[in-house]
Image (tube, rainbow, N blue to C red):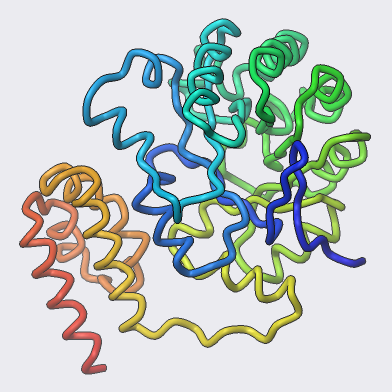
Length: 332
């Protein structure tokens, strides 16, 4: 099988066909810009945005949600909700800001989202979900895409049956995560079920998402699902070089040298500084703490020491700890 070199959505081509997933609490400007600097990102999405945050949000919070720059392109914006009028207004607001495409979240498994009917909650009423998607498509001129899970639970794998309806209302691309809402992130993504979604599509590309943790896993996902592109999520959190490595593999290039500890440490420190610049000294430090296990889980094996890192509130203290760790590891 010849693997695709690019992805086309609504007449626009993205290369390589590797997308960065919209991950709530993670896919902000500070994270995206770091990954783009490493390479391999054909298209990135924002974390999911509520219409209220876009239309009624004020000040710094909305500013940080929407932060981007010319280097952080191309960038899609993901919205979520239960009411078509709200989603249409949000899509129109984004279109007026010049965004290239909008994605509707129909896959978030978080209880506070899905139990109220948004995200994967929309999969409990596929007809209504398709109707909402059609309303949003008709409200704007830019492409509208949809991100699905396989279904609400293993007893209702509705995604393949939804594809013709989503195509009929004008959705420009479909991303399928190979788990149900009930599975959350447990178990393995079902590549056979994702293939059924791909085979149900006649006109739009289908992007496969789930368990992309290595170039080999990415290649397997392409081959076993027949997808037009892949979306990388959690794998990129702890390994920011993953998308670069996948892109090289798809192009038939030899693997790049693995990043050294010094390179990893420099990336970690630069990410922290981007967080501080985006959220302010205290806000950036507090939000950065969730990244510490991603970066140094296998280095800070001493639990009390890890806990002390996770309690830091002062940016200079965080810098001191990172510099101390860098100095320790450089001597190994």
